[in-house]
Image (tube, rainbow, N blue to C red; front, side, top):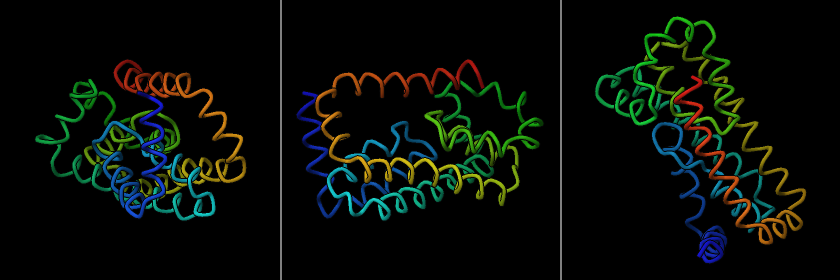
Length: 193
């Protein structure tokens, strides 16, 4: 089943709709969706390595625009939408504890979440809810998301065929690792942040 899903994703990555799908996933992941855009970025670059810069750019811009939606949710819809998303991630009680700290150091938190598997959407909502300086928020989002997506795309461009072979040979292991990182990010939100 996993192999069929991989083959389907690789085939989808080469279609004319792939770029719009990448933009949509990148946008919504930054504010509410739990699956990172890497699940589309990686097969898209592997399928068409010459477009790595374009795909990384689409992913970065869409993700930063989605982060602004998360900021908006936190700033204007915190009591209705923002609290529900934070409750889903187990962080509804942490708001008061971190609000003061966050306005001083939140830019570093956003940068950390933008680069790592940590659920970025939690910090985009926190940023809006606490009133983190919006130019700082945008700058660290561009830097962090750009670094993450351009580095992944460049590595796939540089080492594509061996990476593709490695992925295809170790699909089960890599899927397990991906799930551990994804779940680990949620656990980190619940117990560390």
